[in-house]
Length: 248
Image (cartoon, rainbow, N blue to C red; front, side, top):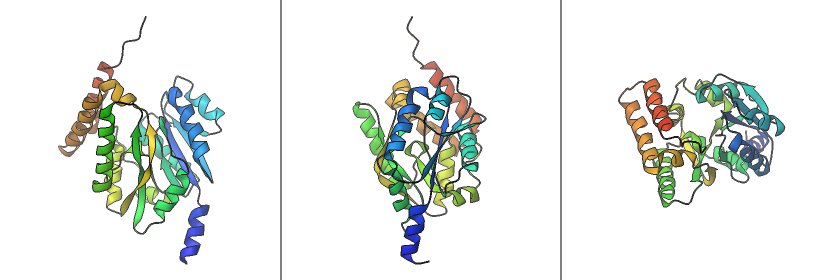
């Protein structure tokens, strides 16, 4: 196949955007509006809901998305969505994250580069605190130097490679970290020089320093062989402890 034929094939490929959700009504509508406005070509949007009790499913259906109900768990939900996706390219997006303009063209351009097998975007976090800018800088450094983007950066790759790898590992936490490490053994990950915009709620809940520290604790615990179920329990317990008390 000639280079021009490869380019035409890539341009015609469909992108399936897979969004795992659980009670994302506060953010999902904006995510979907931005997504649909930013796309230039052939995409499908699949929302995989893990049992929301708010208006998440209603919002997704009203936006014309394909909605799938699944067992709760980000890895399970993303794998479920990928199994029913029709696109040749898969893009995994968090429900509180907005894609940049022409994201589909940027993805196809990245995958057209020699030796690139997958990729993600730069990260921008909502909020004006100076500490968030340091977090963004750290993410950029980690992604570019060490080829370790995380799920909140909107990972993308070809569907056949995803299935060949067996999808995301069935872990309760850090499924994106483990999956990206598998990808690195197959080829290069491109970091698109355009940013997704993600909610700052995680950093607002625990604080910027503590959220960053917990991320590093999770990685260290993983390398030390601590069971992912225990890591998840620690992280969840701390988040619940710091949830704001509703006003009367």
